[in-house]
Length: 232
Image 1: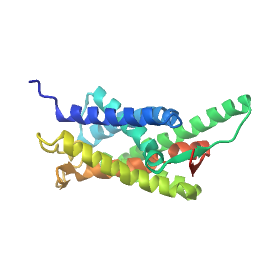
Image 2: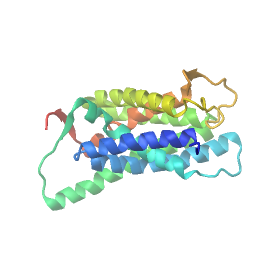
Image 3: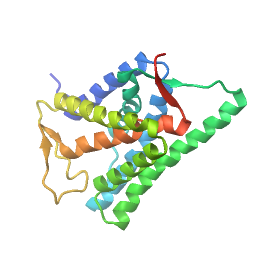
């Protein structure tokens, strides 16, 4: 029998969950794809920052990390809607005006995610933080900007963070059940800190899942100016 690496099992589990959410709701498919693609932006940034903080001259980028970022970000963007039955409240708009607005909010999304990525870079190089600390702090700053200007998205952000933390924890436990936990401190440039686990899941990974969900959950609605309501 061929043994499947645990990180590939985790990727498969997230793929199944992503496909389930994508098939379940037509209204959120576009959001899952767009936010998932934006997740690609963070992957090379994480590699770059870790190479700098760990002193690596060369760091090979694994394609599975790009795919995982796409799946995780897509799930984080819609999990609150799907669990609580939230739907977009849309307004009818003229064709030309709608396409101008599409270009505007897509640019807005790129600015927000780019600010998250470059914020992490600035924290690492100016304040000498680890890659983990820099990206977490910059993510929280972006998330606070979102909910400070859109108070109606507070619960979206909080619940998305909590739900992604729980989902990641459960799927990680299943994927790494036989092989045991993978130490994440070296990957995050935190080799001077003792590794901490909740069950077999690295604490840093749980924090990352929660903060990423907190930011990505309301990001699409914030950029497009969409309101969330109950019902169809």
